[in-house]
Each structure stands twice: as C-alpha cells, then as structure tokens.
Image 1 (cartoon, helix red, strand yellow):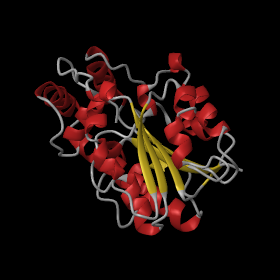
Image 2 (spheres, rainbow, N blue to C red):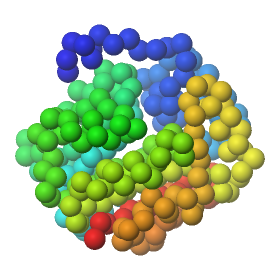
Image 3 (cartoon, rainbow, N blue to C red):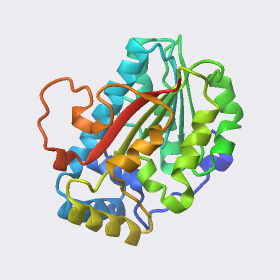
Length: 268
C-alpha cells in the first residue's frame, strides 16, 4: 500500500454503494450518510437485507463449486467491497489452500481495510489492486495482478453485485468481454445482478434513490443478465434467482425478496 493511496481522503459527504452494502450485511465500516441512504432504500425495499445476504451466499457457493468441480485455482474479484468474512479467498482456500486471488475495487475505504484481504494461506496468495471496472486495461496491465495470477491458466472472474453500477452508456457487455478475452479456455465468469423483474415499481424507487445520491444504477432483466454469458457454457441451473443457484438447503426467501439473477459460465 503506497503512501499516496493511504493519504487519499474518504468522502463522507455522500453515500457510497460499498459502504451501503456493508450496512445491509450488518457490518460496521460505514458512515451515517451511508446508513441514512441504506435505510431509505430499505424503506422502499425492506428485503434489501435478504438480497445482500443471498448475494454473499451465492458468491460462497459459486466459489466452492468452481474450486471443487472445475479445478479453478485463481480468481479475479472486481468490485470486492468492504471485507466481510469469510472473504472469497477464505472460501477458495478452504477447498484448495494454494488458491490465488486478486481483489480490485475503486473505493479508498476498501483500500483502508485491504489487509484483511491479504491474510492468505502459506500455499496461496492474495493481493489488492485499486482499480475501476470501467477501465479494464489498467487493471489487466497491473504488475500486482501479474505477480499473483498466471493468465495462461484458468481464472474465475467474479463480478458480484457490480455490473448494475455500470449503465448501458458505459458499455457493460464490452467491459466483461474485454476481461474475459484475456482469460484462457477453462476460465469462468461468476456474476450476480439485481433485477426489477419481480417488482418493477419497487426497483424503480431503488433506482431513483441511488441515482439521486450520485450513484447511477441500471438493474436488468433476466435476458439482459444472460447476455453477459454470451459464448460461455452455463453451469446448471443456468441463470437463476440467487437463492436457487445450487442452494445448500431449502430456500427460505421468495424470488421477489431476493431479486437477484445469478449465473456461472465456463469459457470453452
């Protein structure tokens, strides 16, 4: 962590999506402005806490499946968010201790807590890169990424609850294609994405709250989420609501409460 990064001020004058997500998960790494914005979302969509919980649970299950069943040993997790245990590398390394994980986010508060993401097993490796998904070239060209990941071997690209913060004007599909293009056959995309499909009126309110707070969002339909997996071989059960993607037990929430499309695809 460089001094220039450490010296960056954290803007507490406006809410930030990563800190709001921390609040939804019951964390403590947020500010009053984030709590107020999150509570405004919760007033319109009380199940936001369920959505956040199920998003996290999907990440855990997808990571385990890729490690156990598909031989993945490397992950690139973009839009990491504020660390919440178990973090992705802890899940992966519980299955394969030699797993390597690169985390990337553009929030200085995530950088502040990045040491939590560096506690790797002795056999594995993790690192944190400050980068923006809207600039994939700078991320892919990062020396820190090259030190940890071998792009000649399969990598799982993990994009959890991230791409709805990339509007169509920012070319979300082009960004994902650019990231996948450098990954070899056998690599994977694990993606979750909030959707208005089950309750359009409520999700319009959520869209307005985020946009008015200075964070443009674009929640997408199942068909539009499926486009991120174009050219990939989708694992069963395909594009599914988060709590229905290979659940560990009987789902205890409704599709409308979760309102999250999820999927995992393998690059041929």
